[in-house]
Image (cartoon, rainbow, N blue to C red; front, top):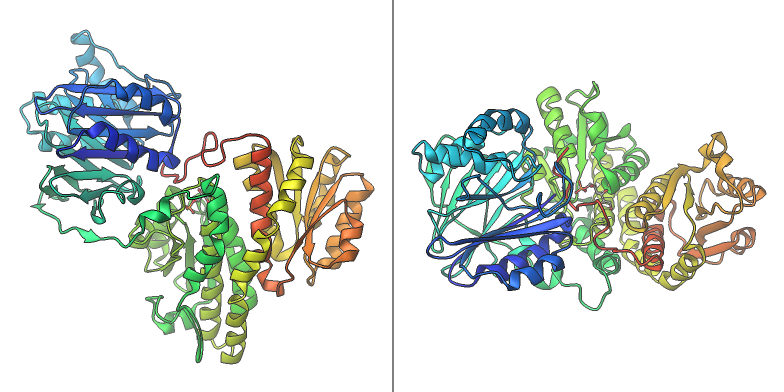
Length: 618
Ligand code: F6R
């Protein structure tokens, strides 16, 4: 949520900051701004409501300078406007800050600072919580502190998780960055006589692969040639950067019209990368090298709880299904934001599996904290981001290796998380002796067909486009699934809502007649996920009930299923899959339908309104 960039060096900072913001725009895009300092401390700030392109033209007229910070915003306090866009300045104008997170006690701090502002005849320049930060720093400076000390004191006063970058007119060749709690990361990139700062790696990759991830509680003073960290407790040191192994090409859109489309097409490759070396057939073993948990722990688990949010929650729901069916032990799923405020009974023999592609989702991190503090239960995280906060909190991690996901809607990381959950179910079942080596081998062989199921599902793109043309004007959809397809119905509805802005409900097919059926008429299309499987006959009964209400039915079913094709108004064929693997054959179709609907409606697919890729605020 919100993207932060910074630069200090020998080049003009403006274009570098702008390019960095373009790469972070998926984190928030309702307004943006940059502040640039020249060597003499002359400061220029430019900010604009709207997309980055609105800022771009303004920046061309901005004075130069080789030091600066920038921000792309996802509004929390104060609506999107020029006034509320970051950077924010102290009333004295000499301290400039960009922030990602929430200052939870900003009202209290504003009240405290108000008296002084009134006395000086000054007033707040925005409706944000952020503005208290430069003001607090400025007060500490006025009391005679160095900038580093003033920043440390100000941060000490903030409640809530925050990541900050700051510049000070008095130190024109330096930027500061600080991190408190889990408000998304701050990464420092080391260049040649220049340094870069960003919330996330994609903004740094074109410049450097030598990086340092700021830890919780650290404050960095960043000069063109060196970085000095002030750790918790005030210790100072110069960090050792590490090399990241990420290909800049991975974050380019290439020939695809949208990142989302590119990432849908990348799914077979992403899934192969997730399972590489983790689905061994001779002798059969699942995740042989990943789980840093003793086999005895896995063998003694009595229950598994899988948690997540949004698309990751839907992966968790499918994971629950696999753990029950493959590992043969009780399993549950929960919405992380609800779980942590209940009084769940876990005990140390429950394994908690957190699914979070970003590894920074605040609700999921909060639930993980709760598990650790209250229950001490072992925790595994399934994530795409090695080194993310979730990997630090969990006992062990499965990194899904999907490569950066830039489209705001999760696609390839969904299938990567699914593959990791399937492997985990296999590993637990085998460790518990409930899944024989022979049965394990069969399960893994089936998983190895998943990339081709995805490939063939993607092959239905043209058919999805036709259906989207037919239903582009519909205002509602009901998506029905049963068994393992029920979470996919929910995922389909989520994708329709988030990128096509169409109201869609994902329902367990059996639930339809308990209320939603009242909605149905000729103008209410129903998407039925109906591959052949144990619940197919029940699904066709539901389809009959829908048809009897004259609602148009779009069925997604097995290739060659003439009986189903005959029964419904529109049919999309997917490759027949083993019963537990239908999530892989159906997922691309579900995603492509939503994508094509959004395209038909002319929407901004990679940057849907009101959303941000990583949700780091509550
Ligand atoms: C939907 C989507 C969101 C995320 C959710 C959790 O396409 O992207 O619903 O799935 O915000 O994010 P992570 O997986 O990063 O915890």
